[in-house]
Image (cartoon, rainbow, N blue to C red):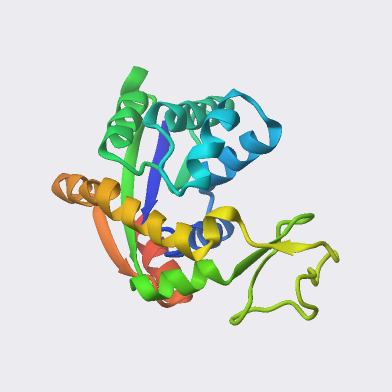
Amino acid sequence: MIEAVILLGAPGSGKGTTAEDVENASDYIHVSTGDMLREAIRDKNQVGLRAESIMEKGELVPDDVIMDVVRNRIEMGEPDARYLFDGFPRTVGQAGMLEEFLSEDRRGFLKNVFLLEVPRETIVDRLEGRRICRKCGSIYHVRNFPSKKEDICDECGGELYQRLDDSRETVLNRLDVYEEQTGGLIDYYDRKGVLMKIDASDRQKTLNLILDALRG
């Protein structure tokens, strides 16, 4: 059976970094709906064209589009794979769709939901200062982890850029949208008894707590 684990948290709370750490330390497969959507946008396919204008405004992509992306990814994998979802689900509606999909023909189950908690002001600084290489995807921060040459990637020499959804105005809007539309998801999983809240200010401690819970 498929095993699903979910990372919840506001944009910039470290879900992607934490998911990569867990993937490197275990047999869980990191699935980022954000990455898959951005790939769809680059490919100019139907999902990408529909999602592009919405993401640029910092708003959430409709539940059915997100679920289509997730469903396609899972159906491409092994029937006993372990998935670590980063950025999905973001609404109670998406959570219900995932549960329904996993329950079909006893396909799989939800094991854990981890909520990464980080102060709002820290998140704004993280995202507004983030820069990404156009060629290799390496990530930098203008203050916390700058490249040796301004706007040039240390790894491949590619151009560093700020994503449209990392501008300060859009970041603040993304946080407002998260709190408004995703807040209910925390209560939803808390009532189910699968939610674990984690202070995500320390990367190694966060990883250790998650790995301990997954082994339990």
